[in-house]
Length: 102
Image 1: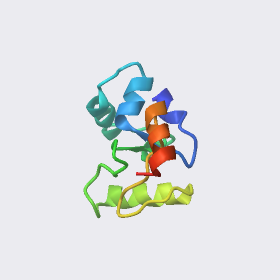
Image 2 (image 1 turned 90 degrees about the horizontal axis):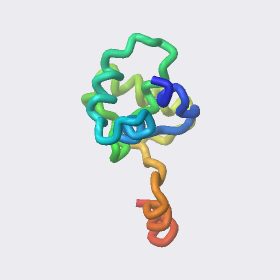
Image 3 (image 1 turned 180 degrees about the horizontal axis):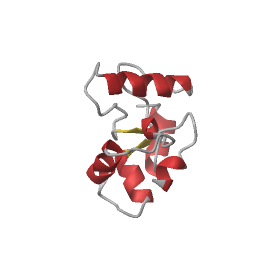
Image 4 (image 1 turned 60 degrees about the horizontal axis):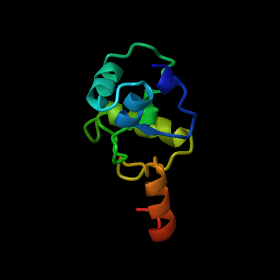
């Protein structure tokens, strides 16, 4: 949970990125399961998304709407339930610089 608490407002991470930073590479689904059981009202769960930037909850559900609203309140652009994910490695950053954002 410390990794999720450390995500600054207005920024997002993927489930896999959270797992990697928590020392559990390849355990994105475990991250999602833990978040689904979360009862800590201070945990910024809304900053964690699928690797492609999509909100993982069913589109139009109460949770989906809440996550969209929380992200937008922090200045994150959400379009059709998707957020543009930041480049996570030097190769991705280079691709974005050469070819433009994906």
